[in-house]
Amino acid sequence: MSLSSSSGSRPDNPYWLLFGCFLLVGAGLLLMDGPPGNSYLSDVDDIARRLQIADLLTDGQWHDASWPFLQTPDVYQSPWSRLVDAPYVFITWALSPFMGTDGGFRIARLVVPPLWFVVYAALTVRVMQHLTGRRPGSIAVGMAALASFLVMPEFYPARIDHHNVQLVLMMALSLGLVSPNRHAGLLVGLASFLSIAVGLECTPFIAVALVGLGLVAVWTGEAGHIRRFGQAGLSLGLLTLPGSLVLIGPSGLGQVYCDAISAPWILALSVGGGIIALAPRLWGMPAFSNRAARFASLVIPGVFLLAGLWIAFPQCHHGPLYMVDPIAKEFWLSRVLQEHDFISLYAEGGPRVLVFGPVALTGVLIAIWTWTRPRTAGAGFLYAIAVAAVALALLQNRNFPFAASFAALFVPGLVQAYGRASSLRTRLVPLVLPLLAITVIIIAVRRTDPAIDLIMVMKGDACLNQDLSVLDTAPPGIIMAPPRMSFTLAEYNQTSGGHHPVASLPFHRAAPSISRVAQTFTRDDADGRREALAPFDYVAVCRMDLQLDRAPAPLFGALAAGENWPGLIDVLPDSGSRFRLMRIDHDALQ
Image 1 (cartoon, one colour):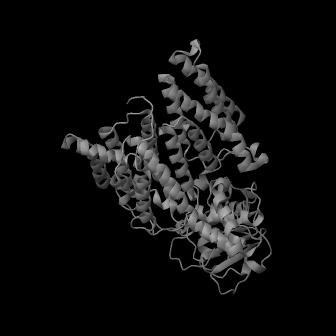
Image 2 (image 1 turned 135 degrees about the horizontal axis):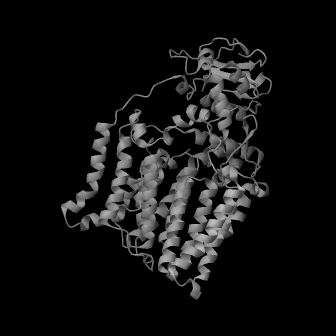
Image 3 (image 1 turned 90 degrees about the vertical axis):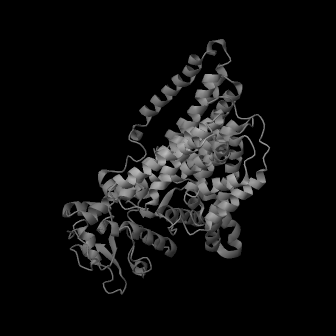
C-alpha cells in the first residue's frame, strides 16, 4: 500500500446525483417493516431514551442525568448523552405551540432518525467519492446502499437510541481521514470527541484511526500526513473540555464514571489530544529528523499519560462494566442476544441468515484486498477500521451495523475493480473462504431450539395493556418487578405523574439492582430474598397461566400463578386486572 496522501483535489463526481441515488435506495429500505423476515419493534434503549427525553421536556434540567422513574434504591444516573437528546428537544419545542408537547415529541421521534439518515447518506457518498478517486456509477452507489441493509434499522422512524448518531459520526471520522481538504484533520478530532461523548462503542475505531494517522506521519514525515495528524489532536484537545462543559455541566467535569464522558475521559482526551497536536511541532528540529525520535516523542508522553490515568482512576481497572456481578451477568447480560457471537446465536436457534451476514462481510474484506488493494493512506486507514469492525462483529453481534457501514464504503470501488479483473480465478478467490465457512458452520454447528423458562418469560410483559390504576391510590414507594414489566410501570409512572419508581431496568449501571431482582425471583433463599427486597416497598407481577418448571424462578412462578406468599400482601386483591401489586411486609417475608 502506498502511503501517499489522498488525491490533491476533490474528485470531479456528480455528487448530488449519487447522493440522491443512495438516498432513494436507502429510503426504500427504511420503508420496510424491519430487516428481511423480521418485523421491527422498539428495543429497550428506545423506550428508556424516550423516557429520558420526556423527563427533560418536563423539568428542563439539561445537566440533570437522573431518571426519577428508576431508583435502585438510589436515583439512577444515566450515562446517555444530551447530544442525542438535543434534536428531539428542539423539534418538540418548535412544534409544541401548534400541537402541544406530547404531539411535538411524537412527531420528533418519527422524523429525527430519518433526518440522521440523510446526514449519514451525504457523508457516506462523499467518502465513497474520495475512496474511488474517480466517478463511481450510480448503480455502484445503489449497490453500496443495498449492502448497508444492516445499517438501515438504526434509522427507522421512532428508533431514537444513540446508534444512528454514532454511525453518522463514524462517517464524519471517515471523511476526515480521506478528504484532501487541508483542514480535514480537524474533522477527525471533532468526530472522535463527539462519538466518545455519545458512547464508548466506537472507541476501538477511533483508536485505529488515530494510531494509523500517527504511524504514517512518523514513518513518512510528509507534511500532509503530519498536518492531518496534528489537526486531529488539536481539535480533540481543544474541544473536549468546553464540549464536556456543555454536555455534562461544571459538576460533571469532576465526577468519575468509567463508562461515559467524565473526569477520566476528559483528562485522557484533552491531554492525549495535546500530545498529538504538540509533538509534531518538534519534528522540524534536527533532533527529530529520524523515525525513532518522532516515534518516541509520541510514545513517551503517551505512556506517562496512561500511567497517570491508571493510578488516578483505579475504579476503571476492570473496564466500563465493572458493576456487573456474576448474578447480574447470569440473569441478564448472558441472555442479551446482541452480546453473543454469531455462531453461538446461530447454535442457539437464531435465524440461519445470521450466518450469511458476517461471512459476507468477511468476503467483502477479502475482495477489497484482492481486487482493489488500498492505495492511499486514507483508504488504508478505513480498511483497517473495517477489518477491526468486522472482527468485533464476529465476536459480538451488536457491532454488525458498524461493520456493515465501513465495509459498504468500498462497494463502489469493488464494482469498478470487478470489471477490470483479468481472470475468472481472480474474481472467484474472495468467494471461496466465505462459502467454505458457511458450509462448515452449517454442517458442524449443532442447532438447538432456545429453552423457554420462567426467566425468559420475565423478559416479556403480559400486563402491557392491563389496568394499572391501583398505582393511582397506592402510597408512594419503589416497586420491584420483572425486567420487561418494569418498563411498563416506568412509562405509567411518568405519564400519570405517579410516585412509584421501579427498582431496576436492564442497563449496566443498574446491575446491582438487577442482581436484587434475580435474588428476589430466582433464588430459593429466604434470607437472600429479604436482603434483596430490604430497600423496596412493593413487588409486582402479572398473572399468567404458566405450565413451566418453577425451579428457575420459584417466587415469580408462584406469584404469576396467583398464589400467595408470606410477607407479600395484595394491595387490591380483587382488582379484575392481571396486574398484581403487593406490599412488602419485611418482617413476615419468606
